[in-house]
Image (cartoon, rainbow, N blue to C red):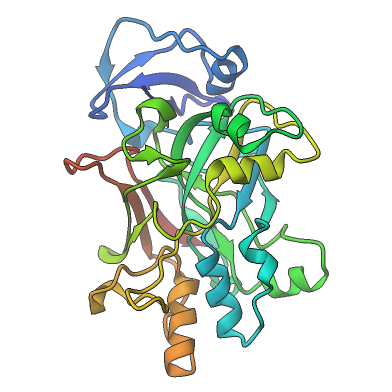
Length: 319
């Protein structure tokens, strides 16, 4: 079962069930994704109509909660190595997580808007949508609460992050609204879903050229049940909580930093990681952050080359 939300001019849009090949849609009895999650049911109507991902908002246009982890600790290690900082050992056993903006996820083709001086960057991630998660849930209980899987672009303003974090209180200005692929897939039927992870090649193109072909199921230190149980340690999570994996990041074949796609590597899921590798290897970063007119495309295909979630396809626009 695949779900999408059509942008009908209302804040929460109109929920539709989408065919596996993303060509047709059926309206649902519950008009919104949140209502379907609250009722823990999904009843599509019979009549089929053509599906057009360009008419979609985010699957869950606004959520009660968005929690973004950093499950690929290789990404964190590269960040710290590039700036000569020691990697605390607990980062490998205790997940990092922040609470992001959930009041308005961007649709799959909405522009990325910002000032180039802010250091605009994309972060290609996997995300899940949960049902109710009780406080103190175990990883097994958390696994049973995962309802849907989707892709997410966690937009980051890199030039604003250091000053915010130096205050010791977390992200606000440096983490604007994230964008989502048009379709969320029911976890029980999602291709590549096993062991609490999504296995498959997460593809990123920048201005039409391959930038990342990273493996989402590899090098994931913390699976989604672990991330959800971490978030629910002291509080319950309501239906419709979105939990992100953090930037997908792979080690190189030799265990070190990965190589760009142009050099035969898997590339990266964000500009910052390529810049980190350049700093480690060459002493300075040379890849610029996003500029007005740039275009970012993020997607994942199944084993037969068919799109699973549709694509995030965004153009960068200045303020």
